[in-house]
Amino acid sequence: MNDTAITPPPALDAGKVELPPPVLPDGRVNFVGLTREELAAEFAKLGEPAFRAKQLWQWIYVRGLTSFDAMTDMSKGLRAKLAERFHIARPQIARHQQSLDGTQKWLLRQADGQEIECVHIPEEDRGTLCVSSQVGCTLSCKFCHTGTQRLVRNLEPAEIVEQVLIARDVFGEWPAPDAGRKLTNIVMMGMGEPLFNYDNVAKALKIIMNGDGIAVSRRKITLSTSGVAPMIRRCGAELGVMLAVSLHAVTDELRDRLVPLNRKYPIAELLAACRGYPGVSNARRITFEYVMLKGVNDSPADARELLRLLAGIPAKVNLIPFNPWPDSSFECSDDAAIDVFSAILMKAGYVSPIRTPRGRDIMAACGQLKSASERVRKSSAPALATSAPIQA
Ligand code: SAH
Ligand code: SF4
Image 1 (cartoon, rainbow, N blue to C red):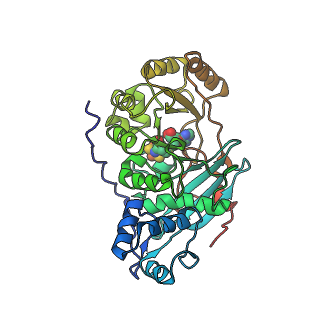
Image 2: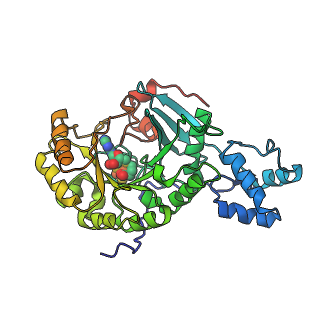
């Protein structure tokens, strides 16, 4: 297999929506979404020294400013020039929900009215933001609610970065405190397949990782893919983030059904790409996600076959109890079955945590995300009726 060849992602399907224009009618460009290099080039065009670009970057990504007026160390003339050329955008928070377990979910409305969800999961020693990469998802994994959403488009780099900015706004982490931060980790595990929107995801992550600004390190960022094998090496080489792979089945026959992308990139090809993931080692293990579906993929024999498949790959296995959603056709495995499965993996030396479902009561757990606008149209899910918009 040649895992350096890049297969272009399949075209977005019939439900595709067009991107909003990147420039406002008055000609201003969204500042968010420019890389440091692009910003440096803009400043060179304006005839401004490079250190000014760094100052501006810090105002926006360390202090969280959304207007140029308060940037007191810049001359009035420069502030006016910047305000003519750029705006600093935030999406509208169309709805905010908080789970009994502290998980929060935001429904973010983009400039074109399309909506995405973004989730914050607080834990004792960290706070993880689950970020979306697409409106909906073109892949229709059988157990995933996002995969049932008809309208799909890629998110722009700015729309990905803005999810982080919104979270910092809500937590008041401008600047982020040295200790006790609410946002420490990022997982690209929200709506969408990040490797089908690789260029925009890569640009956004470079902005998020930049040490002068948001500065979340690549070790604290995990990108989850359903198995776009040809893009995996590039992701590792260019971004160096932690990798998670949604495996979910140990035979091609079953995985073809659960994760239809497997028909294109079968298990052997996917695992070969994982073996070649740049920087993979015991310190930087690949996480294999495995959703526990009752009577489908949860037998001891499945666990033993999983061990055989993963042999030689520095890996940990995240067992995810299936999170139900309206009309889903699976059941979650029994606790006893999950425990047996986990014990087989642990006995073989694998770290195999059972992921505690978080935010199920607000449909914020893995695989439950779907834009509310879509859900309203198709059904009247109670999660919506009980939540209140916090910002118009
Ligand atoms: N598209 C990417 C990332 C988003 S999904 C991917 O598939 O990897 C994040 C994780 O949640 C994936 O492992 C996905 O398979 C899993 N998931 C999807 N639906 C689920 C459900 N109903 N219950 C539990 N996990 C689910
Ligand atoms: Fe898309 Fe991931 Fe859901 Fe599959 S599990 S439909 S790839 S979001």
